[in-house]
Each structure stands twice: as structure tokens, then as C-alpha cells.
Image (cartoon, rainbow, N blue to C red; front, top):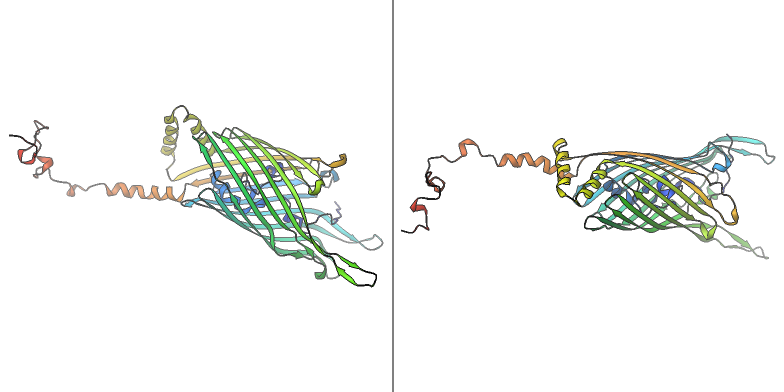
Length: 443
């Protein structure tokens, strides 16, 4: 396929801001205040540790893909992402840790360039990739902080230019905070309000492809918003989210007056995009969601819908126990007891699998059709957990030693015929003791 790239994007390295995750994009491309999927790492690095804790995971792997601009029928124009994470839940009391690596990739197909007469003088495969390492900590299940190191490599027109440039490389950083306390009402209803904020594309301020003197600015981004999740026994839940994406970028401009005096009129522009999402979960296995993305100054409105099918063994057991405890708490105890007989206490075996798909339904002013209309996003995630918390492992290791400490050797046991209070009991009349030992004896 032949694809001619045109500079229609404000971001010179668009892979830095192309969102991922079918569920997150299906909720209006929101995620800075959420921890619903491993792809929240893209929006806010702080969300990762709490995601691992909620899903009872120590490892997770996920793949995401979407064909871009389906109206143009360009099969080589593809966006994909591969993500994996490692989580240490409660590795010390009240502290969780998460690490995620993701590779965000966009394939543009074959890019070509022409001379002044329109003759093709060169072509090359065009693509961009961002490799990111995300680190996050959660304190007391309520406050999370995280940071991301992003290394990008953009090959829009490799080989183009007098010295064969046409590529750009660099490093950027993200930093995020998320506040997410939980409130439980008699273990029946759980409410979690959350606030999130993330600073993106920090560090390197610009990139250049051909001429260093003609560099393109990398827009700074500030994402902030809030969400609320209400859950009933793990059977039904609702999540509502509203977030803002603020983008700051420099606009270079100059004016020349009638005296040929040039004035620098450069300024910093600011765009805001708004994200709204709603999610309904029915049973621990299925959820349906929709969202809206409102472009700067009403430039576009996109509606998205989608669904997710999930299996999480550990969360399923938790839901069953929560329901049975309403009628008989012994049922839950028997479930835990049966599981402990089969699996040692320090193990917390879990398996997790999730399949999501969402679709863009554009609503553009003046009834115009967007080339993104009908664009689908899909991802599949799986993960597992083996051991429990570090505290549970310590207890399991120390339990045999504690039992051994209470076993008294035979040579240390008291002799049966040695005089003592315990041996002065009249065997024929156990209630009667020796007068010398009975201080309450009355003559």
C-alpha cells in the first residue's frame, strides 16, 4: 500500500498521545482517575499498583489493536500496543508496588516524497514506536503515585532530506497522582470516589526530522478528573467518570511592519478536550460502557460504546462469600477452609482473563462524517497470581517453628511420682486435696 503522510496532527510524535485500551477508549478515552485496566498506565502511571491489588494479580500481559481511519480503507494504517506488568501486593504492610512496560506502535505504511513536478523521488516504510517503563506505589489502599519513562522513535520519512534524516528520537517523562479512598457499608455496598492528575510529555521540549533549526514543539499535557464507583456485593456496579485533557503548545509567529521591522508574535496556545464515561457491570463476568469525547471548542463529538467479558477466580470467590454471608457466615468459612485444605495458606492462586471491544460512533457538527467513525478497538488480557502477601508467607514459614516450640521433650516432662500440687489429688476423690495444700480447708 502507498500512504502519503500529511501533517494534520498538532503532536509531531502522535504515538505519545494515542490512547490505548478498548475499555478506556470506550469510556470516552478516559483513564487518569481510573484503575479498571492495565492500560490505565498510559493515562496515569499512579493507577498501576492499585490495579494489581484489586485484581489480585502478580503478573499480567495484554495486547491491543485498532485499524485507524477505516473510512480511508488503508489496511496498513494500524495502531497496536503490547503491555505486561508485575505487581507486589502488600510486599510490606500498607504498601503495594507495580511495574508495567508497554510498547505503543503505529504503522503508517509506505511514505513517499516527490519533487516539484510531482515525480516520486523516494519512499520508505513509515512508523512510530514508544517504549515506556512505568513505576507506581500505593499507600494504605488510598493514595497512589507513579512515574513513566518514555523513549520514542519516529520514522515518518526515513532517508528523506539532504543527509538522509527524516527520523526523530527522544525521551519524555510522565508523573501522576491518584487519591482513591474506599467506603464500605456493612460489607454490602462499597463506594470508591477517586481523583487523578497526571503531567505528560515532560522533559524534551521539541523534535526535528530534517533541520535542527526547524524543530517541532512537543506539547505538554495535563490530565485531571474524577470518577466514582459504587459496587453491590460484587454483583452489580456503576462507574461514572469526567476528565479534562489540557494541552499546551507553542505557536511560532512573526509580523513585519511597513518599515520592514520584524516582530516576534509567538505565543502559547492551549486546547482542552473533555472526556465522559459510564460503565455498568452485571455479575463479575460482564460489563457494558459508553462515553463521549468533546473536542476543543466543539470541533468534534465522538460517542463510543463497548463491552468487556472477564473471569477472575479470586474475585469470583470473594463475591460468592459476600453473598452467602448475608444468610449464613459458616458457608463462607467452609469455602475458605476447603480451599486451605487443598492449597497451602501462603499461596493465593488466581487466574485472570479479560476480552474488551469498543467502537467509535462519531457525532460531528453539521452532520459531517468523521473518518474515525466505525473504528474498533480490541484487547485481550490475561494474568495470574501465585503467592499471597509477604505477611502471609512469613506466617506460613513461622507456623511450624511455633508449633515445635510448644512441644516438650519426654526427658523434660515432670515425673508422675514427684510431690507437687498436681500430684496431691486424691484419685478416689478428685475434689479432695491434701490438707497441707488446701488453704481453704476447715477443721
